[in-house]
Image 1 (cartoon, rainbow, N blue to C red):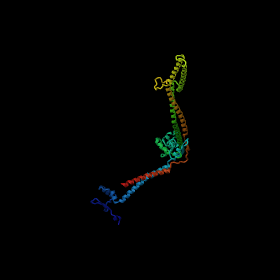
Image 2: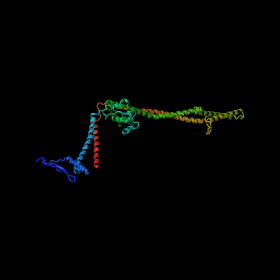
Image 3: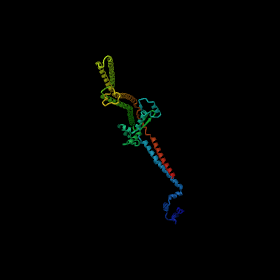
Image 4: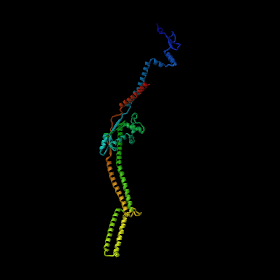
Length: 442
């Protein structure tokens, strides 16, 4: 028996309900293909409002879940390849075969003071403090911040060619600085290529400069050292001026006060036309004493003559006239010394009143003496302040001069590659975990 007789051809006939059954085809009749049969079945199911995929999921739930899980795993693996393996491999190839060598130059220096370190400053250094606002430790922090600031980029000489140094290997776009960058980006690149560290215990500042050529690294380190020394000299000069400034201001005030008092004394002498009223008062007192003594002598002589002469005698009258003249002279001299007990002074009587002039003169003399002593004390304080300022001078002590590298130390190719791989792997793992977390909650 032939195979055609064993497996007769079949044909499909629709039932009245629309269901397709497979019937044996007549011998010599047309053969209905399986694809056409399945397509007609899918079309009829869709026309009736049924989803063929949902029917298959209901009929074969295990198979559908397995297919979805396999598809999900494929997407996860594809994501790992596209976002982790491929980028990290490309970065590693760049680091090992494309990134340029970098050479470093190291220098170390410290800010020192010429005056002996006080015990309080030593205690502050041990406890981690600065030991005072003017101590070398605080100035070391200033120098450290200066090296990491925008100011040093602006102060560097133009003949160094910082942009040309950091763009020697322009093909290495990852580690080159680039051209025409704003100052903020240049400062960020500067801090990446120039590392600064400060040891508060020893007070030493360490600077490491990197570039694509050893000589360029030495040039950068020398420039940093030079600018740091200039800054320390400026700080020292500022400290000296700050110390001396207050003493100089005190001297200026004392000198101005002394000049003002001397001008008042000169005006007083021009007005009174006398150099020293005290000397005039002593002369007046001596004159009064002499006149009073002479008057007493005349009175005694008159009393002697009155014992044997008449009051109308020429000798007695002459003595009376002499006594009256002496008394008038004494009264006149006393009037020059004071007002005789009255506190009021008539206009125009001030120049004739020696006591008032003497009081004003003594007041001016006391003020002049005080101003002169204050001026002398201020000059002594100024000299002391200058000596202290000279003893407080700061200087830069260089321990390690800029070194010349013979072998490239940077970049750390393996560490950079490993860090890139771990970072991408971590990001990929976070995204996958978030996806599974969201899927489990829905």
